[in-house]
Length: 61
Image (cartoon, rainbow, N blue to C red; front, side, top):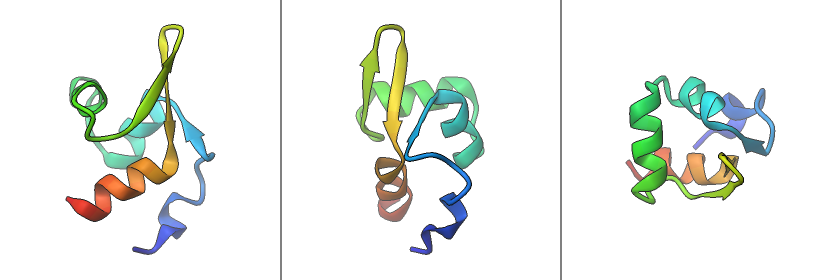
């Protein structure tokens, strides 16, 4: 997969950026995170999402 489409985003993104990258709504974004389809860690009240886990998700789906 051509990772250049993700080049404008930092290596670690938040939920809002995940929504922008995938073109999805908030509830689907949280569903992907809580369901483990996109790997992330929760720091306090925020999810920290490694950009490579988004790339993996897109590549495999």
